[in-house]
Length: 213
Image 1 (tube, rainbow, N blue to C red):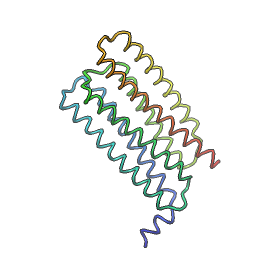
Image 2: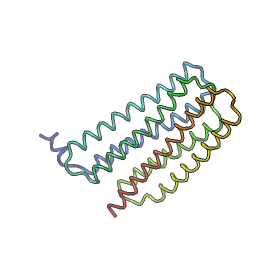
Image 3: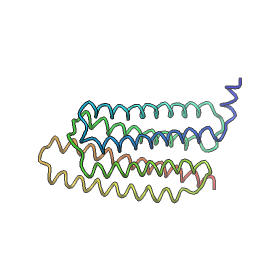
Image 4: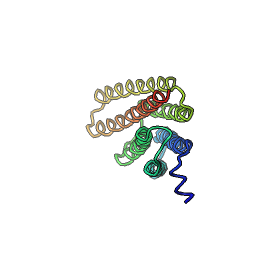
């Protein structure tokens, strides 16, 4: 009975805590991705697979957290913020982690030989985005204005766009091997997409704050 009442009588902290856990997991994934990319050129094939597997473990944890959030939503009648917003944030945060895992997996599966300055810059931007995103989830608990976080992440996303376009320009201009072009293009696209997802999360958070203003 106590277990049932735990779900039927919602506690504000429950969903904020779970979203915070998901954001923290995304940040951990961004840190691991940065570490993976920074050291990639020095690692042998076995070490690269091992590093990618570490990121896969984080991605699996993200799936578990998302499942826990969805289960909570299905069992709770009244939530501190709209169910749709909680659902959307959980899905987007999970998308961030899924894409981080996809990047590491592509490096290994495609047999990418080395990183470049563009890949490293994008990894830095992703880490900065995930850090700011984690802060915004903490502030969501207080229903504070997200403008500062949104501006920072929007700026980072614009920077990622610039790096992405520069990377593509150099890729098609200097690379002659079509297979390499395909490999790097896919890596660039996935990295840039992560920053897009981070910005989408801040849109949802800002909308929540406006609703509760």
